[in-house]
Each structure stands twice: as structure tokens, then as C-alpha cells.
Length: 245
Image (tube, rainbow, N blue to C red; front, side):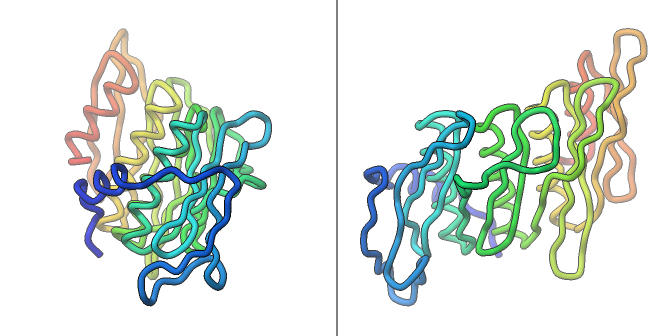
């Protein structure tokens, strides 16, 4: 399946009209389209538990999508991104009643469901976790690769977040590295995108510090790439660039 085009994403973001919170309406959609129930769509807004942010629900072509954010603007942008994904097939939602990943790690873990397929991601905030969840949904639509955050292990330098990925006949793992929670998970998303093309492992070892220089080792597709930088993030980006990620 072809990857979601940037023009399609812009078109959806510019044309999607806001819907009243907690409203419901009949939904017919185009011929042959399905929805969450016979002719019913459920747009609206919910607050996440523990003041964690906002969930926005909107009616997509094939049913109700829902995105998240730390505030209303971020949640709206996230939901509009999931509307674009729904054009390619997967209908994704984050459920306000149970939005959080049970695996403990620094930051916020958000889980979602795309046409009955579970995905999950971490970020320092609900906004960045939602953005990473959207990246996983885009990868799912393009490659059928389903990825979820895996058990977190602390690192002496920076943060390392692992993800496990599967699709019919294949399973593999990635691990992103960075100076911060967001940098590490952003790197993991880059590795998810690269590894989903081949279904092979793509992961970082723990960073090393030699004097004032950080060193990062990336193992991808049977090769090892060594990155250098003044920070863990810079070293990881150097290694990822060498690997084409």
C-alpha cells in the first residue's frame, strides 16, 4: 500500500470542520463505507484521566477517529492526522476511558487501536506521545507493520526506548536513543519507518561517553554504524544518518 502523501494530509487538515463537543449525528458516508454502528458516528471531546489532556473524536470516512493532546489545539491536530490515515484504511482511536500504557517508563505512554490493531507509543507529554502514535499509524497504513512500545530499561547516558513490531510472517524490534524522552522516541519513530521496509531489527546500544564526546552504536540490517556528537541525541542522529534512517 502506498504511503500517505503530504498533499493529502494538508488537504484533510485544511478542510476538516470542527464539530461540537459531545454531539452525535447520523453518518452515512460514501457508498460502501462502514462506521461504528449502523449509521452512527460519535464526534465529541473527553478529558483524559489525571489531567492528562484531551481526546477529540471526529467522523472519518469509515468511522470515528480519535486523537489526543495536552491541550485542545494539539488534540485537534492529532485527530486530523488520524483522519488522513483513515483515508488509507486504518480507523484509529484513543479511548478516554483507558488511554495509558501499563508499561512504566519516564514520560507518558498512550495506546490506541487502529481497526482492531493495537499500537502504543511514549513521549514526554501527551502531545508528543500522540504524535508518535500517529507516526505508528501512518507506518501501519503504509506497510502493515504494527508496533508497540516495549519494556523500558534505563540507560547510563540519555534514554533508550524499545518498540516491538510485527506483521504477517515477520517480527522485529527497534530501540531509539536520545538525550531526552522525546528525542529517544523521535529516533525510535525514524527506526520504525526504516525497519518496516525490510522487517529487520534496528536498534541502539547504550551510549558511551569518551571525555566530552558521546558515541552511539546503531545496529541495522546486519550492519553497525557508529555516531559521534556532543550529546547523546547528536551521536544518535549521526549514526542514524549513516544508516539512512
